[in-house]
Structures are given as C-alpha cells and as structure tokens.
Amino acid sequence: MNFATRLLHGTDSFDRKTGASSIPIYQASTFHQFDIDQPGEYDYARSGNPTRYALEEMIAHLEGGKRGFAFSSGMAAISSVFLLFSAGDHLIVAEDVYGGTYRVLTNILSRLGVEVSFVDTTQPEAVQASIRPNTRGIYLETPSNPTLKVTDLALLCGMARERGLLTIVDNTFLTPYYQRPLELGADIVIHSATKFISGHSDVVAGLVVTRDEQLGEQLYTVQNGFGAILGVQDCWLVMRGLKTLKTRLDTSSASAAKLARWLKDHPQVERVYYTGLPEHEGHALQERQSSGHGAVLSFDVGSRERVKALLDAVKLPLVAVSLGAVESILSYPAQMSHAAMPPDERRRRGITDGLLRLSVGLEDVNDLIADLEQALAATARFAAVKEFT
Ligand SMILES: *Cc1c(COP(=O)(O)O)cnc(C)c1O
Image (cartoon, rainbow, N blue to C red):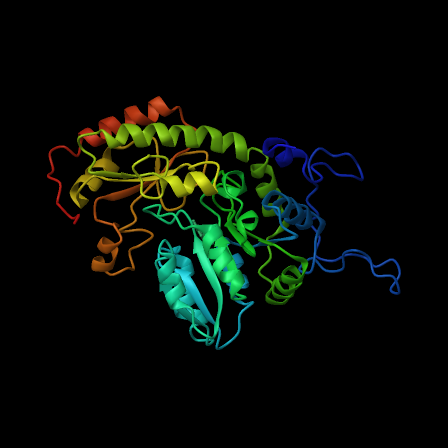
C-alpha cells in the first residue's frame, strides 16, 4: 500500500463495532469491568482509551515502528522520552534543537542529574568526540530549525548502535511521509503533532513511536506513570488531520520549492534556506535520506527594520510562532523561538535580525508570491545590514 492509502486504510479508519465512518470519541475516564476475574481490555483512561489507542496504532504504522504513544503536547512527548534516562546518564543533543527541548534539558533534566552536551550533529566527528563512558543516547532533529541544517541519520544511528546508545529523532518538520528515521536505524521517533500531523493550527499534541516492543513497554510505563496523555477530543482531531497529510504536504512543499526559487532571485532577499535548493549544503544528503524537502523555508531580508516593514505589510500569512498548518505562518526567530538565545550565539547560527521563517500553507502559491512581493517592496527603503561572515 502506498502512503496516501496507508493514511486512510493502514489501520482501522472506521469503527469495527458500528461501521461509523470515523473512530468514535470515547469520552470516558473509566470502564466497567464485567467480571473482576477477567479484566477488560480497558480499565482507566490514563492507562488506555480506544480513541487514543486508534491514533497510537496509526502513527506506529506510519513510522514503521512497534508501539505508538499520544501525549498532551510535543513537549510532553519529548519530556516523557527523556524520562527513560536516569541520573548520571549523558545525552548528546543536536545544538540546533527546538527551543523547548533545550529548555527542558537545561532547566529541568539537569536538576535531575541528566547530563547533556549540545553538539553540531551535522559533523559526525564532533558527535564521536562527545561520547563519554556514561553516554546513553543521541537526540537529533533534521532538518534543523530555522536554518534547515541536515544531519546524516543512518550514519549517526549506526555509530550509536555500535556503542549501545539510543537514537531519538524529532521528525516534526518532515513527518513520516518524507522521512522515516526508524528505517534509517533510529530507536525512537517523536512528533509535535501540533504541526503538520494535525495540520490545522487547532490542537496541541505530541506523538512517539518506538522501534521495538521492549522500548515500547518502558515508554508505556512513563506514559501511564507520568500521565501526560492526550485527551480524546484532541486524539480525534489529530486523526482527522492525519488523513490529509500527504495531500497537504504535496501542495505546501511544491509551493515552498517555488517560493524558495523566487525568493532566491529577489533583490530584497539576502539569503534563502531550503533543502530543496541544489546550493543548500544539506541538499544531497536530504535527497538521500528523505523523499521530500518539506514546507518550511527561511529567508533573510538583511535587517530588523526590513523585517518590521515586511511584517507590517504582509497580508496572507499568519505572523505567529508554530508551523505546519493549512494557512501559511511567518515567524521571526530572533524575537520568537530564539529570543532567549544570546545575540552572538544566534548570529553564529545564522539566526540574524533579518531572518524570517515561512511555513507554507495551502493558499494559491501565486497569491503568496504577490503578497510577499508587495511586502518586500515595503522593505526597500531600509538598508540591509551586513551580518554575514
Ligand atoms: C513545536 C515543536 C516542538 C514542541 O511541540 P509542542 O506541541 O509545541 O509542545 C518540538 N519540536 C519541534 C521541531 C517543534 O516544531
């Protein structure tokens, strides 16, 4: 079965009992036990609920893993995965990791005795050099946010496996449609399902898939024990969104590619980051390990003044944090996702005061181009500041 069909028929997409065309929302916290000597399949909804189970089965199927888990947010999913580790364990984490992931590691897990090294994972030698006797896991995100640096998943998963380390991949940007880390050797895949998986900017959710049953049991203990489960209404919304994942991404990614090429030649744009551009440094690797470049691109207009003029003038995209929705979303990393990062560190990573990130939605691409054209025209009266080396 091909991916588009698997989204609809890979696991039960209708209710086996009644034939209802969508999985019912079992709005129930507990389940009657017909015979206390023969416990039913479900007892208490933190431990399991049929609606949540349907979503968990679906994501496990799509990522090609054994067990799926739904959490109350992407961060709840990520934090629950980190709870697989113990005091004294050391993790190697991609330096461009999502801001919330950085925060939970440095503010919370550090207090619990989990040690972390943030490493440029696009450099395998740097990862190799960071491995310590107590290293237990490698945490990756590719392409990274917002400059879309690409990490070699098969290479690092292989390196980790040889040393008995777990590899965890945040696959939010590409989804299982374009990239399946488990097939490249990863042990755990995580999603902020708030983004492309649900796709409509109307739900906050997280998903995890484990490669094998044993890791699945360990994570189930965390999910049930820590209790950061996804509510059933939101499970339903995520499943509703997931059905159109391929169709949404096909359109948005084609538009992103067209926008990236158009922006690249625009006189008011200093630099464009999109892995689909042949000149992007991660282009070849991305082509090898994934089947698409996704719907997120970043571009640099050269200064904060120009950013301000553009954001004041632009009409179609939502100006907001987040990504992966039916509507285009334009965000300003220097003052949004990466505001807490010291300015020098930000610039070193290419997150200049002129950088914008665009998550391309389902609007007609020519309307998006026309809107950005008039918004970029508004930036022309301000000079670009040379921030690049
Ligand atoms: C949004 C995001 C998260 C966090 O997910 P929430 O659902 O907001 O908690 C984690 N990783 C990436 C790459 C994200 O974009």
